[in-house]
Image 1: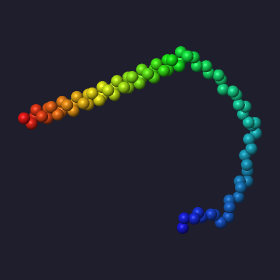
Image 2: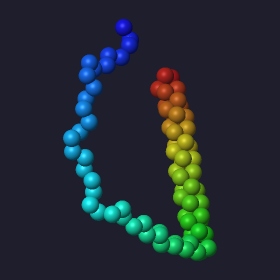
Image 3: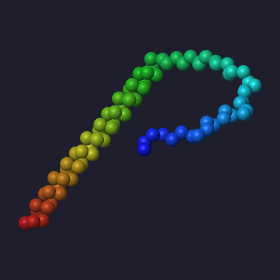
Image 4: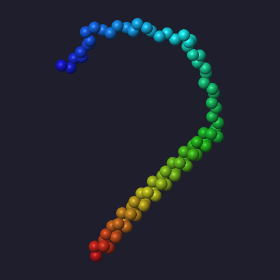
Length: 81
């Protein structure tokens, strides 16, 4: 039932094989890229600044959410009286 079904006659190989007339492309060495210490320091400082900004946004969002929950519970408590 789960055995594969094979064709009765195998397909013949293609009659025409394409042979490229162009020789193999010549591999050129990649250019040397020099990274200075200043570039590495700038990337690290940028990463630290972006991480600090993301953390500040997250802390602000959490504090706003907590304040909203507290105000909502206070208003609901005031409305019941």
